[in-house]
Picture (cartoon, rainbow, N blue to C red):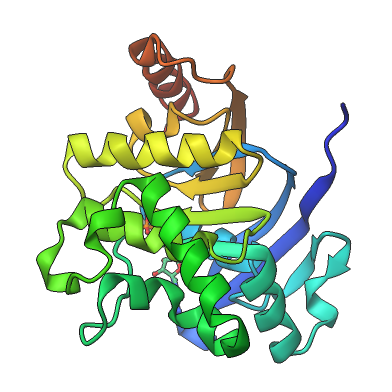
Length: 254
Ligand SMILES: Nc1ncnc2c1ncn2[C@@H]1O[C@H](COP(=O)(O)OP(=O)(O)OP(=O)(O)O)[C@@H](O)[C@H]1O
């Protein structure tokens, strides 16, 4: 079955600053992410990975080129329309989830959805409980966020990102603050979410993390300089996949 194009970026350019401070961060990036894909972006620090993610999700306006999400040109949308699109169509996971200290874990997960649709409080709470069950933190619902581990908080962040049943999860270094075991747990979870049909785009420095995905884009100096595909990960031979990625990085000199 031909998958739908979900996000298309054509010749995206973006700079920060001006005058002597001007920094060209994206120098003409074209990229397509299809429904249900599992992709990662690798590249040196400062190569523009996060900026690309922000451009594709409409968190940052671009200078040139075009980004479309499900056929809608993000450049034509007003800020509130962009915010609606992000809230309903996209989920975001960062290195550390931004959770509120004065709310328990369940309330943190449901907060954005409650803001949108307070009348459906019961349905929202039920969905959050199901997601917490799925990611293995059901028993932490009433806990303070100071009483949970980094891996557990990241799971809560993922629940929050999934509340709107988004078409895509954008994850910027989702395992960057976790130990190996917790990181692998989060990758297992993201793989599971992807297998259920949600596209996942992640930014990572770590080849063992990228090796779990099926398409890896390599960035350097604001451009995608290479791309590689791997078969769906079956749980076997992660070393072979990592070696393919590191060999490619050596080949392109990043
Ligand atoms: N809001 C901003 N204002 C000014 N410069 C910025 C801003 N955001 C990013 N930059 C600069 O743009 C360049 C690319 O940043 P970006 O975060 O996209 O890179 P990255 O590849 O994700 O890096 P890292 O792996 O270190 O997170 C960097 O030189 C950074 O300093």
